[in-house]
Image 1: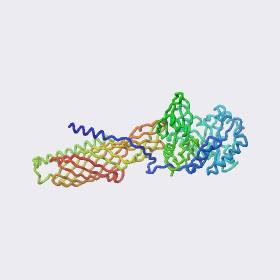
Image 2: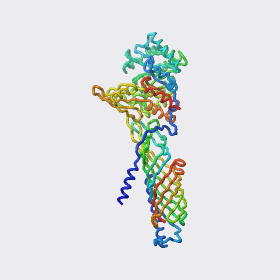
Image 3: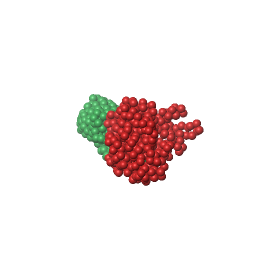
Image 4: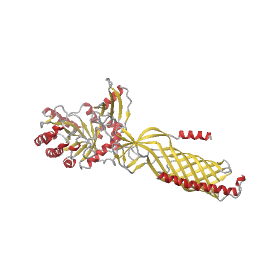
Length: 361
Length: 241
């Protein structure tokens, strides 16, 4: 009897499964792949640096991307649209032409900021958007710059809800003006990633997608900064949350929709959050001999302490995590018509475009 | 509910099988088999019960369908299908019952197999409705109801060889976790999949004494979550004529 019990114990001990390697398998089919989607990339600035240029010249990036969007002209409270200097405008036009020569369409994203490039305060945004004359002036300025581009995008962050009617009118008027200047120039808008109404994110209620849907070609849902604004350290995107935000936008408009993917990471320290590039994050991890872990979405992260003893937690994506996120958006989850806009060219894993290109079908 | 039904059915069929085995013994005693001599006219009706330990192998685990939305931290995940986590071995324990007719024909009646995952299994990263899912096949378990079938047996001195085919109903389950921002939320319920199937069974047995045998057996899964989807092999102790 004792022998039998001993044997049973041994068998029970053996009879425990254990975790082995990691396998990725997306979709119910046997082949893993990233659905082919229209790709765009946002460049923060009016000019590409040499690294960004070389990335865009790669065959892999050409396969993944179609549009390059420069976050460049900026509306001022004065009614001007910067850059106002003729040489600077010529440089922007030359940059757009260069991007076109590389085989991409070249677009401009218009922001509203002060002379330091900082977004206007909510109270000032209220005032300027309510001013019909201001709107007319900036629309004329944008339309003049738009002629050298393939499209204009409106990129307002954390816009106050009170400007909703004025913002809708602004976008409708801008669309009419831009199309008068060049029928092939498209109009798009960057919108916050709301998943409900009233919106759960700051600035979400400023956009009336039903009202502006007929006037824009693209609605780009900025599913970025998932862990921000005091929410604590975490990934810049959650793939499921992004799906809900896109579906919410699709329910309101028939315009083409893009879902955003961050190329940058975030370093969290205390209450501060600082964007970091892939290379910077890897360099810090190497310098402090930090072990990299993968979060639930595949995002890499590590903790470290700076020279002052301040604790940090850094989260950033690489080719593997970004490819996982794109694979999670199979055609049954997000229709193939939904495009992807990658945010922050130059901050990405150098292997990103190659990884995505190899995974696409 | 399902487990209740399974347990009730198991009890019912176990009692039935035990009754058959007891009747068989009684019938054998009346005919003088207990005396140990080789009988010339074996009983026409016999029963048999058995216990076994087995390696239950699925060449491919089934896909798991989620038919109800699942609430996790950041969202409600919609319905969908999760992929197979590949091949899986289980350490299984089973009991089984048979009706034997004229020592030639055997009719498996009812049995059950319980199994737990063994060996290393990969962590499978997939997605459901856009949310990342970590599937944990090393937590898998299985239960099979061995349903009626038909087969033949032959005896040669202390050896017996038999083969049969029977219907089965099988379920497998495993745990999963869903990505929710920076955390990984364990699934509120295990992933389940079930199927009806058909198994073959061949065995070679050596008599231990007049009423018990030790057998080596193999059971190809002719259909179980897919055609020719693995099989079972193991050691079985049988009691009966």
